[in-house]
Image 1 (spheres, rainbow, N blue to C red):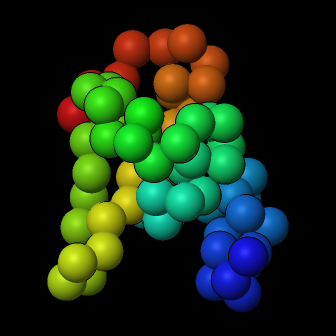
Image 2 (image 1 turned 30 degrees about the vertical axis):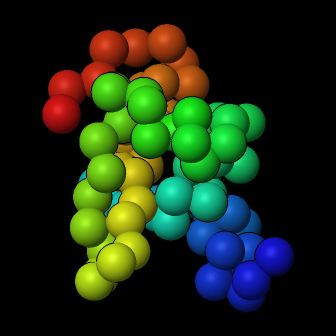
Length: 71
Protein backbone atom coordinates (compact mmCIF):
# COMPACT_ATOMS: atom_id res chain seq x y z
CA UNK A 1 0.00 0.00 0.00
CA UNK A 2 1.42 3.37 -0.99
CA UNK A 3 2.26 6.00 1.67
CA UNK A 4 -0.32 8.54 0.34
CA UNK A 5 -3.01 5.85 0.51
CA UNK A 6 -1.97 4.89 4.05
CA UNK A 7 -2.13 8.56 5.13
CA UNK A 8 -5.62 9.03 3.68
CA UNK A 9 -6.88 5.89 5.40
CA UNK A 10 -5.29 6.88 8.71
CA UNK A 11 -6.99 10.30 8.75
CA UNK A 12 -10.26 9.39 6.99
CA UNK A 13 -12.39 9.91 10.12
CA UNK A 14 -10.91 13.38 10.66
CA UNK A 15 -11.37 14.58 7.06
CA UNK A 16 -14.11 17.11 6.32
CA UNK A 17 -17.06 15.95 4.22
CA UNK A 18 -15.89 18.05 1.27
CA UNK A 19 -12.47 16.36 1.12
CA UNK A 20 -11.80 14.09 -1.86
CA UNK A 21 -9.93 10.82 -1.33
CA UNK A 22 -8.38 8.47 -3.86
CA UNK A 23 -10.66 5.86 -5.40
CA UNK A 24 -8.54 3.19 -3.70
CA UNK A 25 -9.48 4.63 -0.29
CA UNK A 26 -13.17 4.60 -1.21
CA UNK A 27 -12.83 0.97 -2.33
CA UNK A 28 -11.25 -0.05 0.98
CA UNK A 29 -13.79 1.84 3.11
CA UNK A 30 -16.72 0.43 1.15
CA UNK A 31 -15.24 -3.04 0.65
CA UNK A 32 -15.74 -3.02 -3.12
CA UNK A 33 -13.55 -3.31 -6.20
CA UNK A 34 -12.67 -0.35 -8.42
CA UNK A 35 -14.97 -1.70 -11.14
CA UNK A 36 -17.86 -1.87 -8.69
CA UNK A 37 -17.07 1.61 -7.33
CA UNK A 38 -17.38 3.04 -10.84
CA UNK A 39 -20.94 1.67 -11.09
CA UNK A 40 -22.21 3.31 -7.88
CA UNK A 41 -24.19 6.28 -9.16
CA UNK A 42 -24.41 7.84 -5.68
CA UNK A 43 -20.62 8.31 -5.68
CA UNK A 44 -19.72 10.50 -8.64
CA UNK A 45 -16.04 10.73 -9.51
CA UNK A 46 -14.28 13.99 -8.69
CA UNK A 47 -11.14 14.88 -10.61
CA UNK A 48 -8.08 15.24 -8.35
CA UNK A 49 -5.53 15.82 -11.10
CA UNK A 50 -5.02 14.81 -14.72
CA UNK A 51 -5.91 11.14 -14.97
CA UNK A 52 -6.63 10.77 -11.24
CA UNK A 53 -10.09 10.66 -9.70
CA UNK A 54 -11.43 10.33 -6.21
CA UNK A 55 -14.65 10.37 -4.24
CA UNK A 56 -16.02 12.93 -1.79
CA UNK A 57 -15.68 11.83 1.84
CA UNK A 58 -19.18 13.04 2.75
CA UNK A 59 -20.70 10.95 -0.06
CA UNK A 60 -18.83 7.85 1.14
CA UNK A 61 -19.99 8.41 4.73
CA UNK A 62 -23.61 8.92 3.66
CA UNK A 63 -23.53 5.73 1.58
CA UNK A 64 -22.09 3.75 4.51
CA UNK A 65 -24.86 5.10 6.78
CA UNK A 66 -27.49 4.20 4.17
CA UNK A 67 -28.49 7.81 3.55
CA UNK A 68 -29.38 9.32 0.20
CA UNK A 69 -26.47 11.10 -1.48
CA UNK A 70 -26.99 14.29 -3.44
CA UNK A 71 -24.47 14.77 -6.23
